[in-house]
Image 1 (tube, rainbow, N blue to C red):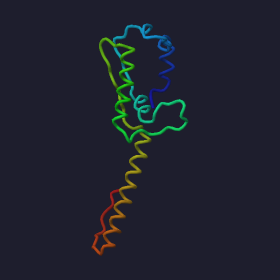
Image 2: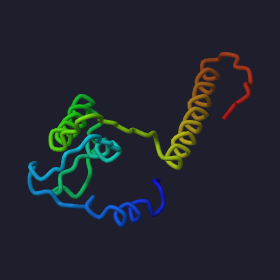
Image 3: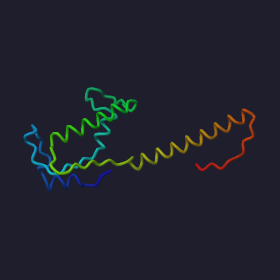
Image 4: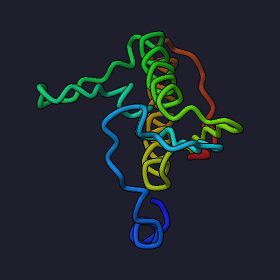
Length: 134
């Protein structure tokens, strides 16, 4: 979600932060590099090909995803050349997405339990009624 109006405050207070650099030689000396990896991870998973209109998930090949993430980080570090510190920040699932994920998991768990119960009853086994924590 981010910090409301932080980008606007940051760019007003430090206008040079938005400078377009044409070459690596124009990068000012940098002590610390702080990277939020959300965008890098997203592009590694969903691709970043501007010629394709649909986004295809690449999660089937995790080795390729990891290689893409490492390649993107390497490119940025190579250009910026921080002298003291590199901090990589990775956060978890967004709160709303996490709620949706948990809800789907609970429904799936309840459905699987019901199917297993029906299967056992179909095999003629005695299945006690259990409390469903979902």
